[in-house]
Length: 249
View 1 (cartoon, rainbow, N blue to C red):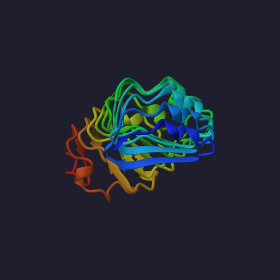
View 2: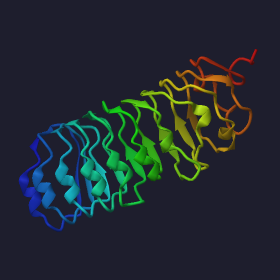
View 3: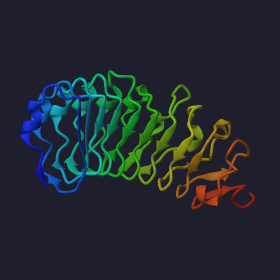
């Protein structure tokens, strides 16, 4: 119970700091953590911490893994996090974060940032165009209030494995999107996506796909893994047809 003690900052050689599954841990993220210059892993998750994601985290230049998920953090995401030179994983999911995704997030000096998880918040606005510069392995922006065209997250030259943009307000033409050859998991359900399903998806080794509850139209392309999914992958669209849905008229 209680708060993270300031004495935690008196451990200058600490490389890993872990407070997880502590529902009675409250208060804000302790500013003394900024003194831990050797910290590589910071995981404060599944607690009752509140307040903002602090700017001072950008002072932890050796940080490779930052996990602040499953808390009650609020306010906007500080753009200064993009100055962390060695960051490989960013988990800010399951909080009450608001505002937009910082434009600076397309300028992480580390090209090794492979986990980009901001789901289950109240983030709004559009996807920064700068994210076209990043090549994440896993992107999860699901269950926010994001809108516009997130196509910059895709692209034939990326090595992305999983993209989850479900339950937002994205509006774009799916038929114009070029997908990474490496993509295995794609979740776009509950948006306002238009167009048709691109034939390029038949070239992918998809393990999971969901495009339900959108505004898609036209015939589902035949081939690849697209017919291996059941109707729930495709239902509640404007006029999709073809297996596994009804035959096109």
